[in-house]
Amino acid sequence: MNMNKLLLLIFITSISFSCKEAKKSENDMKSNQEVEEDISSTMKSENTNAKIDITPIEHATAVIEWNDVVIYLDPVGGAEAFEGQKQPSLILITDIHGDHLNIETLNELDTSNATFVVPQAVADELPEKFSEQLVIMNNGTSEVVSGITIEAIPMYNLREEALKFHSKGRGNGYVLNIDDQRIYFSGDTEDIPEMRALKNIDKAFICMNLPYTMTEESAAAAVLDFKPKQVYPYHYRGKPDVSDVEKFKNLVNAANQDIEVVQLDWYPNEEY
Image 1 (tube, one colour):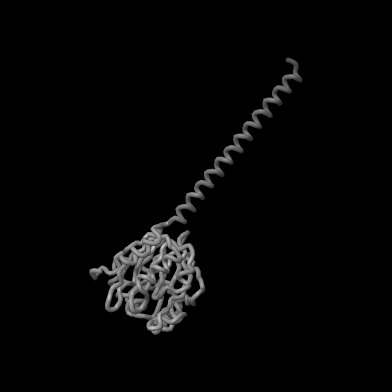
Image 2 (cartoon, rainbow, N blue to C red):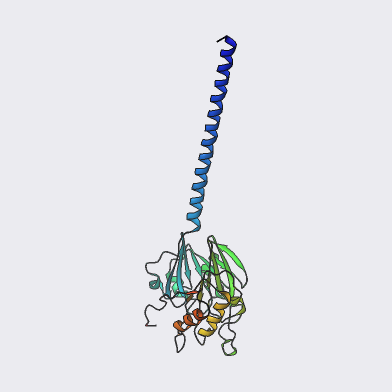
């Protein structure tokens, strides 16, 4: 083999080796990128599918937990009602009535790290010491608090004899947009058009108690209009009677079996 052929062979071999190394490097980069994308996708999935725990306390009061956010809904009953619960980071209050707003309970709880989301009527009743912690919402507005988009939904009476209980614009129901779920708490209301017009609700907590809110029939009719995936009857102790939540369930499922009616224990100290 002459010198020219030898040099040509060395040159070709060198190019071939370089191409293989470049291809290997490209494949390694691609592999690393795919791993990073998989990790990112997994982290995103874990973050957006965090469990939402809803614990009934009594009547209209509940604790909602998601990630590190602890929400107290209409906290009443004194600090003892929340024994074993984590400190609240967000407090939602729907109305001024005593089964939704209780200053004594708020004073007993450690609310030092909590943001209060309230209607103006509630803000007017709260002690001055809470003023820097308030987010005041009117019907039809929305706010982002603790990573949750909160929508203020009207709540009011329709029946002539009940108009004295809840006037339009005073209190708020709330829709909480948590991850990909929309959770509705009705507050004290009847089957108002704003409720019937709700869209894409995953969990709906619906009141029903006379004379203050609505009948089982009215509650079921509204639910059948906006079709939540799940409906939870709550706030169903009235005077003198307790609403028939089994009747409510039967009315809903007779017309739409796709709506799951979930019964929680809202009255642990009563035999309802």
